Image (tube, rainbow, N blue to C red):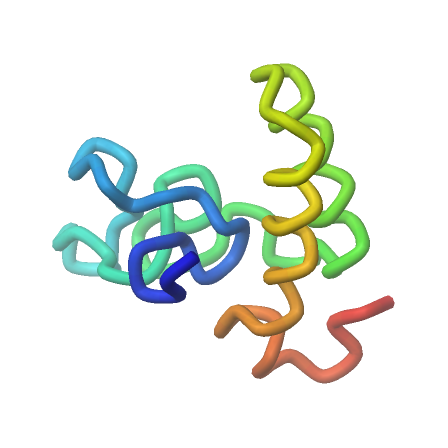
Length: 91
């Protein structure tokens, strides 16, 4: 999965302009989806990497996405911009 083609918080593909988050000035974010990022801020700023992993698994399972792809998405999370730059992101 290309890091630039997915949300740098949750791995959601950013292949649809309607899925893009927004910057403070209202312009579309090139890095984050609308579920993770709105008006230049994370929608759940205190979320941990562990919590995001659980959320990704839950949402992907509800969409009946195959386990192999869920595992790929979760394994990619620690390398995404939001989690690489946060101290203590794994807690």
